[in-house]
Length: 443
Image (cartoon, rainbow, N blue to C red; front, side, top):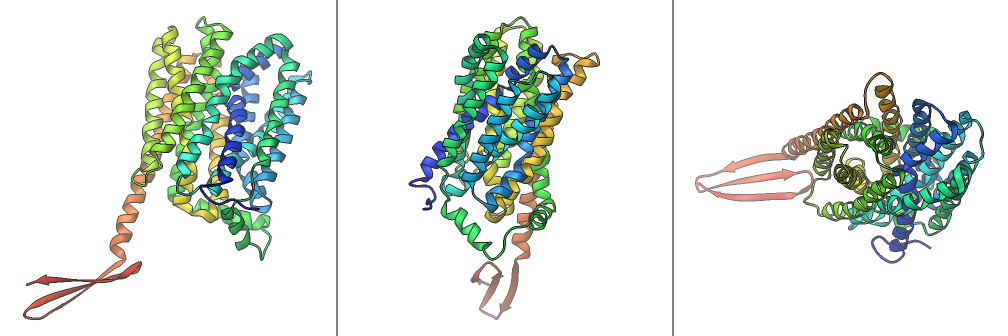
């Protein structure tokens, strides 16, 4: 039984995606609290635990190609349930390992791949089930990424204080299993079935997937978008990993830090919905909006270290970070479809997530290197702000290049034939995309 776009069961699919993003939101955007738990349990160096967190976030984002291949071969439902089982297994094992080296495997790789399958599937399934209201639906779905930190950060902080390290990860693994329930809601949509029907004569092989990705690589517009997301995610996950520790160093308590992250979460919940609704209009350029979002967040990040000792500044920055860091995901499906088309949606998102994964892998250790070599958290935040602005400029370059190409093509498509006599001139306009039009001009 299939779903129809923008109505009926599609809204229950959206509900399932919101639920998945609630789980993902805590694991990803409150990962700074998980980072502190690893630091305290193993008494490890900052750089070591930072690499574990970076590996987890990199596999979360970089699993896009794996998710897109499973979706194209099977379905969104299979990808979500499989990801949930892998994520839960990795988190439970992390709670019982006694050597921090094993957490590179259990938390960094296994949990990262599991969350990546869930995360990418939760994004792609929205594009399959919504057309006219796609950006608004994406905004609602990713608002779960704000609800998760808002509700779950104080709850799991209390769980950590009561049940310690092992109980914390055991219950977090139980939470991850809820994605199996959300995945069960993902009935195949008519768009998804139509895509599979078009490929029914052949099974997509590894070579087919590579061929699709090579076609995407040759897109200059897609490359600009990917570079923008790469630079922005270096900064965003540097901030999310090190913001809690930065607050602790500036005399905030752990409970205060959890409240700051909750504020970031609820701020993101509202702004993502509003951003998606604003971009639902065809008159809005999604890439231009991304330039504004990344640039404003970058400016705020550069300014924050000057006032980091004030609680008010920490609250304001939490609102800014939560409100602007996740808005980009409300429009990512539309951007990929506008550049590559529906048929390459899954592979296009997967390719984009490779760049996001690389950015999330570099970001957290970058702050560790800066601090280990004589810098401060304030210095790392300044670098993050600069990279955010450059990422916004990359998105701006993409939209300017696309407009230049579109303008050139619009002129190249026309041929003018002029015939004249003594009383009138008739200009015939030939356009490859439309019927011929004729205009009568008086002499």
